[in-house]
Image 1 (cartoon, rainbow, N blue to C red):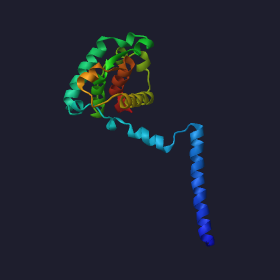
Image 2 (image 1 turned 90 degrees about the vertical axis):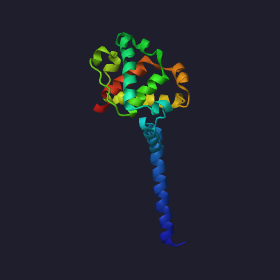
Image 3 (image 1 turned 120 degrees about the vertical axis):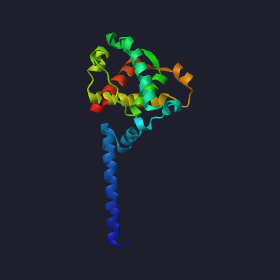
Image 4 (image 1 turned 60 degrees about the horizontal axis):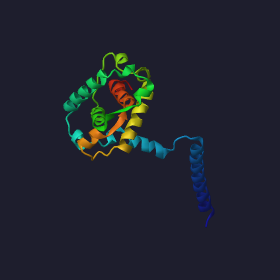
Length: 178
């Protein structure tokens, strides 16, 4: 082998070692690697698989149903509850799917008097925290919901807490500010 070929191999080896070392340092420091960042981008509202009947509904119908779900939400006066009470699972997947579909349609959801609707812990969330919590809910949906089940099965699947639904409604009323 000639000297230039050996030098070329050494340069390539050094570059590979350098990138491997950088990835090891990122891993040890707890910093996300590029692959994890790609996974987070893949798990977005656009890629979330919702039940087929919901995916086929028009924006107007989804918006109308979400308004009805919201009217029920408001009647319970969740803003008066304790933090522990907010963690109770009272909402089923079919309802939450409607809210995610509304988000998928990029529909604005106007809510007046938010401070009289949402618990202080939700109302005080900054936009970045709110966005992160909704991303966590999308991951929860992706990991725990089988979108191929029937409407009846989704209506029996009480997987969502009052806090989850509060976060979704609050986010839907503010996400365009992000």
